[in-house]
Length: 427
Ligand SMILES: *Cc1c(COP(=O)(O)O)cnc(C)c1O
Image (cartoon, rainbow, N blue to C red):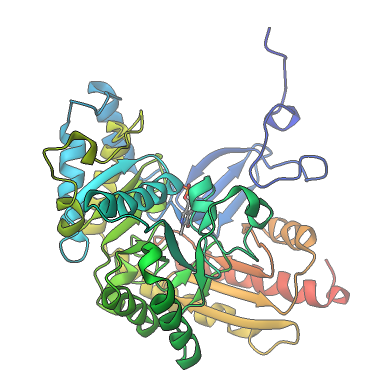
C-alpha cells in the first residue's frame, strides 16, 4: 500500500539534487506554473528569477508548446530511434542545422546536457581513432568551467573549485588552463598547447559565460582567441552552449558574438523551452565525415534509449517557432538594460565584489560566501524564486518576463543583499 501523505513535503523517500538530506530545509511544493510565476501548495505565488535552471525561456506553460506536445501525444509519444525516424526529429535537426553557425549540420540527440557533453567528448576521441591516430586521450578544459555531472563531464569541470573536486581519483586526468583573457594567460595556453597538444583530443569551452561554475563572463575576443588557438594546433573545439544557447546572452548562440564556428556544439537547457528533457550534440561536416567508412566500427558508438523522443522534439520545434514569431532576442536586450538599472543600487556597496550583466543574465557577487540559507529565506519571503550559490546571486529570468516582474525581482535581490550584508537593516 502506498503510504498516505497529505503533502508532498512529508515524504522522505526522494533524494534531492545537491542537497544535504540531513539538514536541508524542506523544499517548497510547487503545484502550478504560468508565465514567470510559480504557485505553491500553500497558495503563495513566487516570481521566478531563474526560469527553472534557465530552461523556460518563453515562460512556463506557453500555449504554443503545450498544443504541440498535446498533438504529438495523440499520435506517437515515443518510438525507438534505431532503424526508425520521424518527422519531429527530422524537422528539428534541419532547423537546428540552419540556425547554428557555419556548417554544424549533423545533429545527434540525447536527453540531457551532461550526456550531450559525453557524446561530444566521444565524438572528438573517436574522430582521431577513425583517422588512425592514437595517443590523443586527454581534453583541454578551462578553469572555472562546468560541463555536467556524469563522470566524463565531471573530469572537465574545474578541478579545484568545482562541485566535483572530491572525485579526482575516479576521473581521467585532463589538462586545465585559464581562459586567455590577457597576455599572460594567452601565453600560458599557447605553452600548454605546444607542450601537450599532440596528447589532446579536443578543447572544450563555455562561450562567453561560465555558468554553474560561478557565472563568470569573458569578452568575445577571449573566445575568439580560444578558437584561434584550437585551429592553429589542429584541435577540434567543443562549444558547450547548454547554458548560453537560445538567446540567453542576447544572440541566439553566444559563439555568434565572437564570429566563431566550433567543430562540435552542445545544446540542451532551453532547447525545448523548459518543458521536456532533450539535448543535441551538433558536428561540423569535417567531424561527421571522419565517421563515414566501410568499417562498421567507425560508426559513432552511442544511442540513448529515448533518443530523439518525439514529444521532446515537438516541444523543441514549437520553441523554435516562438523564436521566429516573437521578439526573443530584443527581449533579451531589454532585460539586459532592466538588469543593469535594477541592480545598479548595489554597485560599490561594501561586501559586494562585482555586479555583472550580459544579455538576460544578471549577477551579484559578494566578496565572501554569505549566509546562503538566510539569503534564500529572505528572497522567498519577498515573493521571488532565486537560488544563490557560492558567493553569487544570479538572475536568468524567462525572456518574456514582464517589466514589472523584472523590477520586483531586482528590488527583492537588492533588499535581500543589503540585509545580508547588514543584518541591522531588519528581516
Ligand atoms: C546544465 C549544464 C550542463 C549539464 O546539463 P544537464 O542537463 O544538467 O545534464 C552542462 N553544461 C552546461 C554549461 C550547463 O549549464
